[in-house]
Image 1 (cartoon, rainbow, N blue to C red):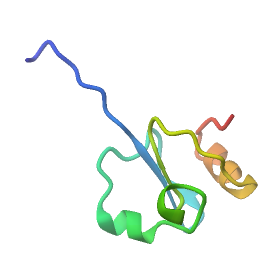
Image 2: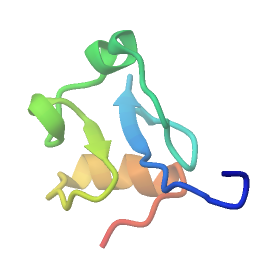
Image 3: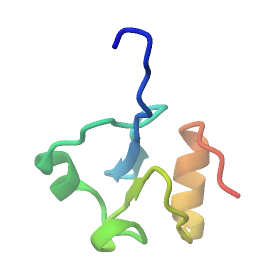
Length: 72
């Protein structure tokens, strides 16, 4: 098994107006998810999972781009 790699999904969380550091969290805790700001991500929170396309607000876009993420 040492020759195999498995894809890892990342989650970006915005808390107190600051996005999680690149590349995001691999296993966010329930406390981190609960503390996320309100937003346009999963469950009405600013939680963005890998592999899902989201429509973000202008404010979220600014926060994500400031943290080094690309928003298209």
